[in-house]
Length: 304
Image (tube, rainbow, N blue to C red):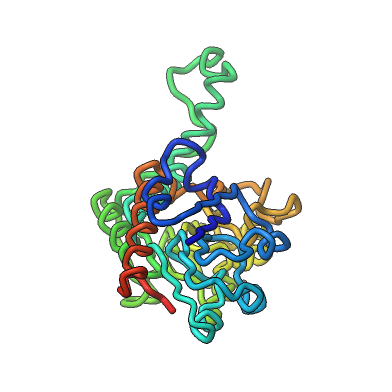
């Protein structure tokens, strides 16, 4: 059995081992990243594909009759035409709930960066502004106390629940959208933790943004395409909301003309919330367990 991994670099840039997967096959081929126009050539006659970013279409699957199993290397699998896979008898699995603590941690980190401006003040000190100051203390932007502020959580699964726990420990009021839509939308922070579907694509549009509390901050560590990026940029520029803190964008890597890059009051990190070494090792471990289950006739983490 031959296994191909289309986008292995972000999981294992060299600090981990693929041995658990290598032990399950005759040959393992790992590509750092795979553009769509190289997918057919690279997949070839392999029986097993593992990927998270490359779009796996019905057309590609039909051209690869040996393909029997697709292991998505992430929780979200909207890059895979799951219906086509089911029609063609191809098993599809994902990696559920492996990064709950890491994504929750990053969500809080983004919120703290918005409230405390740590990066801005460190840069100021490194540039010598503290040494030149007449005062023992100064701030480039006001520091905001989170205790007593509110956070609205949209998507109350494992990650949403963990964010709620941490925010509550910080003294924040937590408003869950599914329980109190108005309270969540009128919170000081609105944090997205829902999967991407055709129904909620661009759910954060102009109407959504003007209904947020003036001065509020949008946080997105879920999926980039939940947000209409042009509408968000316009809302920030117009002052409808106070800003945004994002770990995901609609296109990754983004184009140079992405309307959110370079925008004041918009913090962006390059989809790193999931990426602590422990989480990446968990991905490899679960990929191996999913494949073992399929090989023995099991249904572990099947989504097809």
